Length: 95
Figure 1 (cartoon, one colour):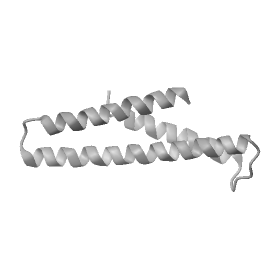
Figure 2 (cartoon, rainbow, N blue to C red):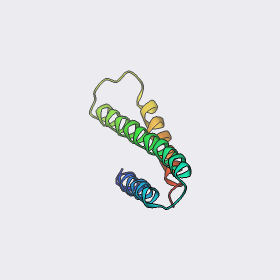
Figure 3 (tube, rainbow, N blue to C red):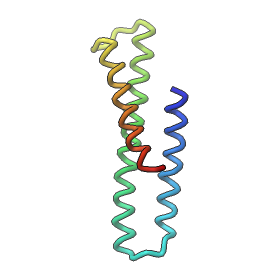
Figure 4 (cartoon, rainbow, N blue to C red):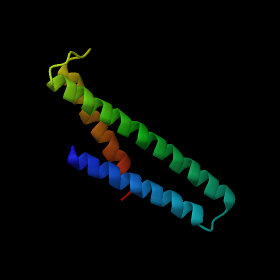
């Protein structure tokens, strides 16, 4: 979990730095607008996946505490692994 938290913070900072860099870049306005739109889409997907990951982690924690959940524990474990894979894929866009 700490590794994922570090990755989330690092990539969130890189996305924001890329946004600032694009805003300051002296490129054609149409090109800048298009690149900013693409970056915004990536940022929205990133934020959505972070939310999904955190919800899944909370569900897992609740299940481990003995709370009744609508799906078996394995469902939440698979979901967490899936969200981690997706977050890592998005992170690979920002070396």
